[in-house]
Length: 369
Image (cartoon, one colour):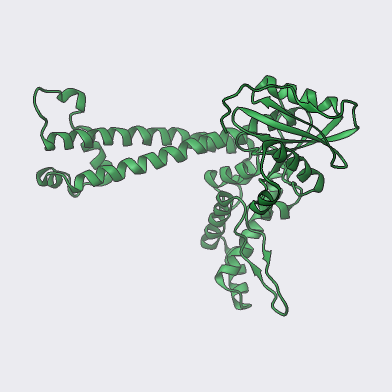
């Protein structure tokens, strides 16, 4: 959310005498954060607005501590606009909880404003509704996340360039199309990359369609080659991080570097924020959800959680079904008991989540800055 007016750090304070323990709630935006301080009984002590800068974070915490002892804070968007603020608060020993937005029904009834959202964030912590602790985002897992993000965007761009190159070939001159017909992808890209580039073909007069087609194919081929090189370079970096900081994951059947990175990103650099294996299973979307009613006892698929982590557990299970005798024996036994294939896979994903949880809990948090 962009703000055109200047941000004033002067808060509206109702009470200046320290009030024991207080809870901080913050509604985060791109340029400024709106904060509210509540007592443990839910009374609003003050609200204020501070710039989203390092100095603004210091001023915000200094202001809140004048009103009482700050041990807990609820922050909206700890993975986006509130990421830097969360790291700053965690470095000061404050427990930071990720607060989801109010649902639409509440907003229709109570209205919407930044101070109101900040107060609701603090109330979510007081009531226990906000229980997910924020990730620190200051260690090797965050580094791996950056590399994974870079790789994903490069893969997407390369796929788009390949599709464009082949689409150009569909409408190309028949002679050129026959020249490139039957080539595999690697040879096709090498051949197209040898076509004269646009800068070497600047001549007086109009260019022919064939000439423009060859130039386009050459540029796209060069782009594909550059993106492939980036992917190879970035791909090796997360693997080295896993080998250095979480080698125990790679010893497990079905877990490779990419799967390990996906699971570590879900856990974060502070695995102690996960209270139990059940909380990790819920975070990965593999915990069963009760849908029982009357005489019908039923549990449905959990459609929540981190879908990247869920996909990683899915890959682990299907790899084990191919190569692990113990998993294959379990699968056959549960099928004979009347379980469907989908139900057995859900059980195996839950077991895999349990195993991963106990392994990542061995990781120690790095030093805080």
